[in-house]
Image (cartoon, rainbow, N blue to C red):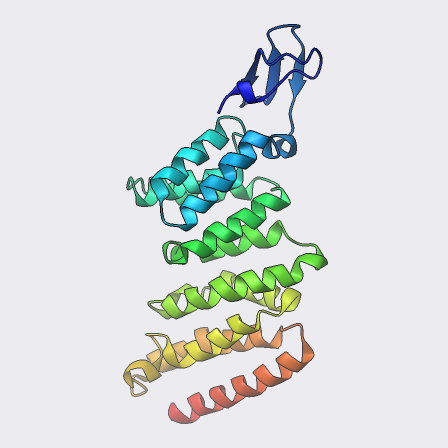
Length: 267
């Protein structure tokens, strides 16, 4: 992909040169220079074509071809979020360049994304969630902060209720439920409910590998108390924040039941 897919809006010539870093199109015919916004570049027909192919190949697990199309996108739209993610994913997991995803999420955090970019990222994240377990806070923050309109609440709920229960089920320890993640879950519960995520958290009280239920280790009193303070009670805070009253009442009753059972079993 190159400037041959673009033309001067002055004289109409396709004899142009495009500088993707400055987003400037220079006409070699009449000398006119035009600035292109991120939104304009992301709707360029060549970018759209490459984006569709990149996403399709990525979701099919063909990361080599997805990367090729992502690079074509970046030749014009240098900071297109889905393309940046695909490249970073490939660098991290195919080329072994540790830190690529971390740097990518830091870059996205500094950008205001277009709506279509966020939708595309959700599709990409969902297609390979196993690679993102260590980045669940970044995934939540990237999507949530760029879809804050109330009309997007249902889309957010659907997305997070797909990916967060997967993360929760794959936690190798309770250490992933850091205070910062608890606060994110509380914000999501207050904004869009996330009932499936809350259900997964309730189940994790018994199923997380660090739970005394997992290996019948209630006799280890300090560990049992620590899990109660830093896992069981924070789950309750998330459930208490659920937006829908009916869900909140139902889930709080389930939480209280599990909490009381935990307290009895801890005696």
